[in-house]
Length: 171
Image (cartoon, rainbow, N blue to C red; front, side, top):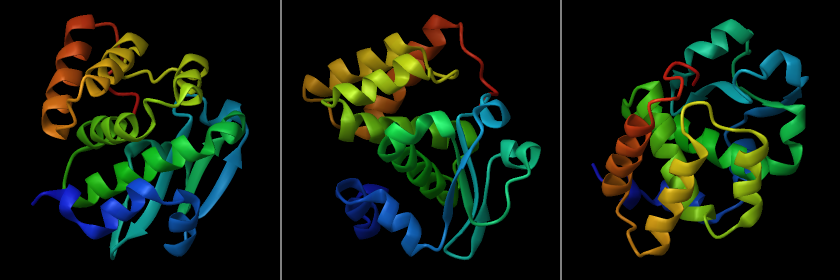
């Protein structure tokens, strides 16, 4: 199934994600950074009758239908919530946590690469599973007119694998 052809996904790519999250009945909670610093954000939600959450939600004790963000991410809420929602949608499709995380990052890049504040967010709060230079390389590829998500996914995985300095179990 081409998930990009799904109307709900296309709508989310161009709309206010906070409103979409509220439409699903999920609560966004800002948590002291010390509690969630290993993840920055995490969730446990019901999406289309399926409970979706990464293992970190158990460690953190996140209640059902909540998305937790570090209090330090407030000014980057749009980016973080967009990522979490896309990751949830990929998990619903059956992707594992790591695959869903990377696919959500690609969608973020497709939407926000031209936004300098998005890159500032990663400079201040690095993604432990994706080196910053790989994100920058991904944006350069997108600016060069490659928009195919499958190709971008393969390129991102290749970049991450080549760097070899990232944690693979931090998402």
